Length: 102
Image (cartoon, rainbow, N blue to C red):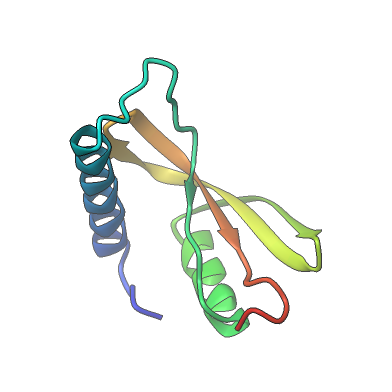
């Protein structure tokens, strides 16, 4: 697992969102109707999914974990909000990799 502390995880996510917004502007993809209500954090293995699930549970609340199309997807409400170009975000979706993709 790449992240071992919440501060670095949060900083990496916020940096990614700032870079994404900059590219949206560079490519003139701005829209008044765009909104964002959660972060989707993808992992490369079932083992990574389990590690990040535990990590996120330690920094927030597991709202639901469901089996969807053969893989688990967990949704968390985080204690600390992420600051993004689209406002504060507290929800993270953590999908396990699709079967057969890794």
